[in-house]
Length: 101
Image (tube, rainbow, N blue to C red; front, side):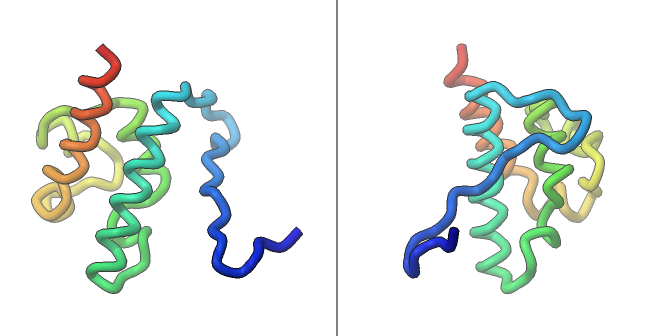
């Protein structure tokens, strides 16, 4: 069934094969990271995967890094991406972690 014009289809957050299903809070965090990635990619006029891959965002949700050093341990995050996008993504993760407590 086609999506009516002007209506966005909700993002599928189905776990990849072999991955554990996400909790509701982790789904919310993942969607927030996807939204920020999409916004940044649009602003820079690049494909979203050039900011971070889906796998990188999923690993961020799994490990929930709270510092640039911890972020650098995520696959797909190097020095340049950490410097360019790190604080933005860390802020989203911090907010999600704080709201759970």
